[in-house]
Length: 125
Image (cartoon, rainbow, N blue to C red; front, side):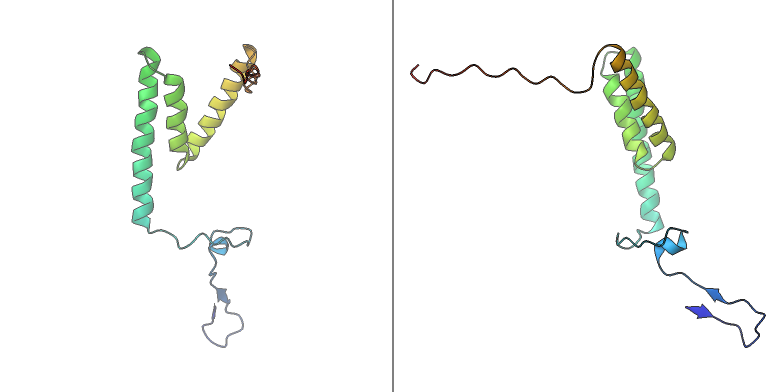
């Protein structure tokens, strides 16, 4: 939709984008993700994710010095935070890389071995 201020040729023509990808400077592809949620809902979601993810992460950090599965809680907290925050996604990626390096040093390949085949059953017993 173009808007003009008169017949003056020197006046620039302004166009208003209607597609979300155009408004954000995207590549022009349009994905039908439904209507944008209200700002209040986005903010509330971000706050909930921050509180829940931060709590799980904090529990994991506490479990480093107390008995508990810190190696489960810390990545879980970062995973929750990574759904809304870029810094957590970057940190989670570094944690994953470090865990794979450490697993490689002790000989863990990441693929569990196949279980041994079950012995044949005697149908007469």
